Image (cartoon, rainbow, N blue to C red; front, side):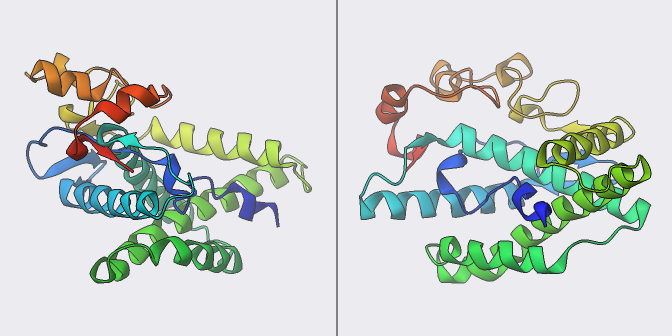
Length: 233
């Protein structure tokens, strides 16, 4: 089924993610409706991802490109916000998911998880499975909407567009409040604005954030010049 190609997070691809180089304020990274996303979850996944990136980088072979900690952390904030939106939407609509596709995704993730510290693997596995499950539930709802419109054999592009519409529509109905440290815009997308606009940060901390948006790619030379605790890989 095409749904297995639409599990878009690809957590197993370590080079896609990146993190924030300044201390976070408070214990809440974001509020999604009545549910909180704790900074402890962001910190855990950030440290886990950085451990994996560092380990793979030491193994050599050019498999990993170094990334600023700011990018990884921001990506995790957005991922966990989206995961919570998916969960709430699935609960409201009573949709299920393709269990075989979930198992396939998790089986593929195991090879990446093997690079993580053993003590972190159970917690990471549970969190990543929840993320994947929510994505697949959104795919199920999109397929149902397309079928109601007479589209019974959608292309990947059709399905992706339908998933995006479902989630964008639901997002407008939920109050999302993101910790200012993560530089969110009015729509609750972290990394979209300069966090120094909402709180004081040092000139170096501001530089370490690099003016990075969720779509901008940092300069490889600039990333390589960051202190070790400001980059991963």
